Picture 1 (tube, protein in one colour):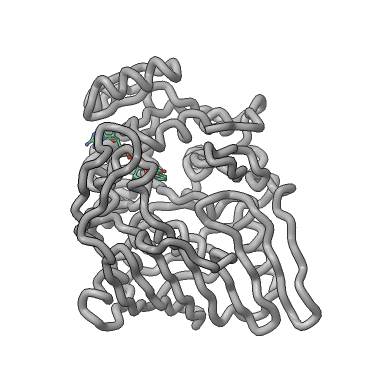
Picture 2: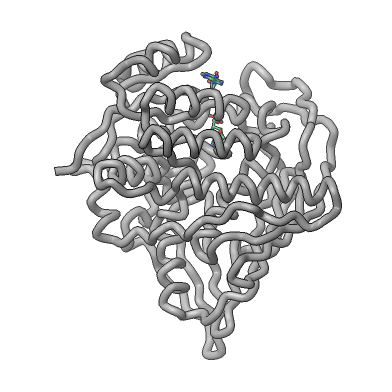
Length: 388
Ligand SMILES: NC(=O)c1ccc[n+]([C@@H]2O[C@H](COP(=O)([O-])OP(=O)(O)OC[C@H]3O[C@@H](n4cnc5c(N)ncnc54)[C@H](O)[C@@H]3O)[C@@H](O)[C@H]2O)c1
């Protein structure tokens, strides 16, 4: 029988809905309470989902709450995660883990000292698509991975996010906001990163908010790079080009991630999602590999614009809580998030200082998530379809 943990969410903004709704998919957790710096926001969310609205301090002091999901803005991540760990709560945080390496290390150290689970987004690398890619690579189908590329390019969030301001400040921008998805899955597939070199720029000093809401028609100052090109060198010897931008009007990179090996090339789907097919290309031709039969690979979420995606946000938390019960580390561990944070900060630093930056931390590749173990994380009556 899977142990079920009571979870409180701190931060009731845009991404709250996805976590609150998708929590029904996972056997090890039940969301029971929520808190926000703005009590009215917490109250509204609590009524919407039948939760208890609490102040942040009351939620952290409540012994009935085992774990916290930190969905605050990046600038509040370390404050809230540290407070949750000090209050004895297992903690799962949205990305990035922290804004500085020192703060990231503090969180990992706090969790280890108190014997608590600490894990963080992104957890998409645990989905059916990227676990299938992991299997293809681990079985040797591409030979030795030597090079690759990753592209995330769009025109920012001021046209759709009601509060886009934090995304253009230090600690965000496409490197720290979207970079975690790409770098995390690359570390899962290829192992830890040794050094990086990068260039960065920003096309615009201000962004006009056109998204409906209280900030519509206001200007957001841009205080962080919004386009960056980097080269990551892995300890394995692989070299991967990562290009991220909130400035581009469109692009033709149809494969979000490509890995090129001595025997074959592997096309890997968007690491912002959990599903999607792979393509393996070798001297004999191209082969599509479906991944929707694997747990957390089936498409289940219809976006307002009509896109149909695999969305299982919270899988990393479910794995962390199952891990606490089993006495093992989370796959989306604090240590993994810390290594990824160091790489992302190094990209920004490399561009600012025009030099290679060595990565001091290292981390083991997270263990693969086998289908039987993944299936045990699924609740008995898990809904199969969602629409946002
Ligand atoms: N919006 C998305 O599509 C998306 C997707 C994936 C991940 N994320 C991540 O989720 C996190 C939240 O993003 P969002 O888009 O929901 O932001 P948001 O601005 O919509 O919501 C953040 C909420 O946190 C609250 N908050 C901020 N500081 C707080 C504090 N110290 N204590 C309590 N509450 C506090 C705010 O009042 C707000 O309600 C970010 O880390 C972001 O990177 C967002």
